[in-house]
Amino acid sequence: MASLNEIKTRIASTKKTSQITNAMQMVSAAKLTKSEAYSARFQIYASKVREVLTHLTASELEEIATADHEINGINYHSMLINRPVKKTGYIVITSDGGLVGGYNSSILKQTMTMLEDDHDSQDEYVLLAIGGTGADFFKTRGVKLAYELRNLSDQPSFDEVRKIVSMTTSMYENEVFDELYVCYNHHVNSLSSQFRVEKMLPISDLDPDEAEVYTQEYIFEPSKEAILDQLLPQYAESLIYGAIVDAKTAEHAAGMTAMKTATDNAKSIIGDLTISYNRARQAAITQEITEIVGGASALE
Image (tube, rainbow, N blue to C red):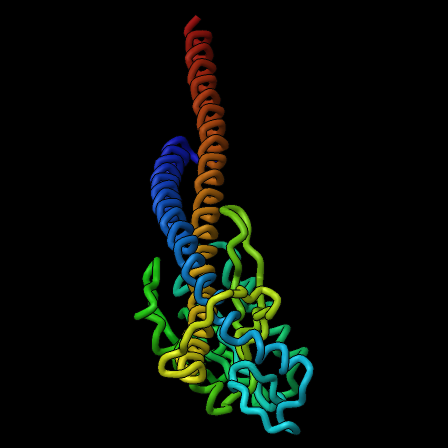
């Protein structure tokens, strides 16, 4: 059995650890609150862009659904067309560090399973990593990365991710890959997240039935095509950026949950150690009393 001093030292060190994990839990909770508010504000912008884009592309979406653009020679925007898939692009979003429970392992395990099931070799896909954990994971397994982005802030601005976001849309337009997916953990609530693989390119989630109908005609300046050339890439970029913001929110929630679990475990250990300390102290007192009584009896 450990001595009283050893148990006392363990109790003190565990209390210090619990204070640290409790502080980290509070920090993660504050980050989560900010991230949830930021994500809600971004969704307002994303929905407005989607609304405008759906209206502008309603006729094209209906024609694409019923016509063969290659045979009819119709010039649709490349981001709306499902072309033959020779290569697939994936953006995998993880955290830069640990202390987030099973957040990273869930993403990486399911992503690797998907890649192994859907592809015969690495030549069939292009990987881009956001987060140092994912980048290091793929590198150690010999998987080549087209690009990696590390050390994002807790609430990343669009400027921070502008390069990787615009680069992926350019790679798609230049046919480096023919479709793009983002793999990340979607934030459900403060206690849970859900692994998602969302198709970002080509843009296929627009529904012409959602298009607004206006009684007044209006003029496009400079032209409808020129507007779409700017708006479609912007919408695709907003989808990717929205996934990054969502993943960061899930990361903060995972960090808060992990630190709460660590704090609760520390309190449980302190309770067990306190019981052991009291038992050892009681045993020592009993031993001392026995020795005193035995000594007194010897003097009689």
